[in-house]
Amino acid sequence: MSLRTFAFFLILAFPLAPRVARAEPPPETAAPSLVDINTASVEELMRLPGIGPAKAQAIVEYRSKRRFASPAAIQRVSGIGKATYLRIRDRITVGNR
Image (cartoon, rainbow, N blue to C red; front, top):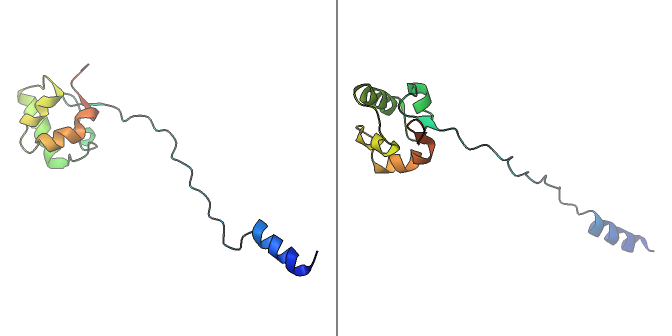
């Protein structure tokens, strides 16, 4: 085998381009735990997407006067509309619902 043939074989067997480590898929993560909007603290409510300090406080103030009968009732809180509800509906509960 000539040197030229050997070099060609090496190039095919071991490409010159650096090998990039393939990213492993993220491990299966547990579904986020449900937040009970009738009992959650301001900090717990703020973990929900789209809920900041002002909306979390508004939720707490609303429920101090009237508890939520269903998750959809959160839309009665000022500043929480349908879009916010749709974003968080799979992450909230009211007790065992």
